[in-house]
Image 1 (cartoon, rainbow, N blue to C red):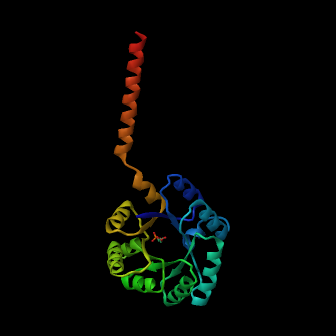
Image 2: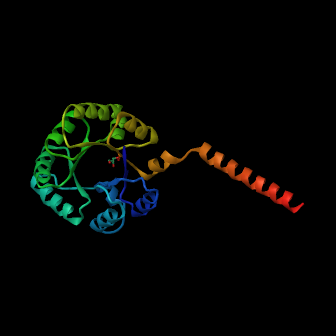
Image 3: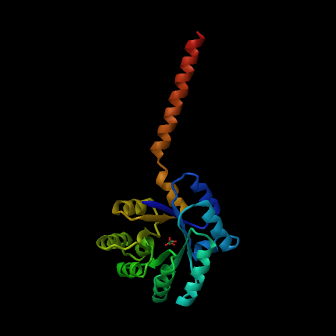
Length: 222
Ligand code: G3P
C-alpha cells in the first residue's frame, strides 16, 4: 500500500520524507488554510520535496471554474494531481481534465456509487473518507471494501485512496483490504512505527552491550 501524508505542513513533510517511505501527499483547502505563506508556493515546495502525486484541490463549484483552476494547478508542477469534489459539476470537470491528461483525485466520496461514477469519468484516484463516515456511526472501512470489490470486476485505471484515516487501525484495515493508498495525518504516520517493545528492547540491547564492553575492558586490564 502506498503511504500518503494528509497535510500541507512543509516542516512535517520534510521530516517524514527522511524516512523514505512517503509516496505522496494529499492537501485540501482546510489543510492549506492552516499554513502561513502562499498556497501555490507551498504546493510547489511540497512537489519538490516528495516526488510523487501531490493532490491540490479546486475551490470552484462549477465545472467551468474547476477546469480553469485545475489547469492552473496542474501547470504548477508535473507532480500535481487535481482534486475535484464528487458532485455533478466535479464529475463534468473530471471528465474534461482527465481527457487532457491531468490526473484527478475525486474527493469527498461517501458512497461506492460515487466512486464508480468517478472512475467512469476518468478519475485516477477516488478518496473515500473513512473517519467522517465513522463520525456519523457508519462504518467507513466498509465503503473502502465495497469500492475495492467493485473495481476488482473492471479495468478502471483508478486507485482506491483511503482518506480521512484517523488512527493506525484504519491504516491497518485499509492495507488488509488491499487499498492502493492510505493517506493520513503525520501523527498517525508516526504512530505506525512506534512500539514500546521496540524502544525497551533496544534500550536493553544497548545496556547489555555496554555492560559486556565494561567487563571485557576490566578483564583486559587485569
Ligand atoms: O484526505 C481527506 C482528509 O483531509 C479528511 O480528513 O480527518 O478531516 O476527515 P478528516
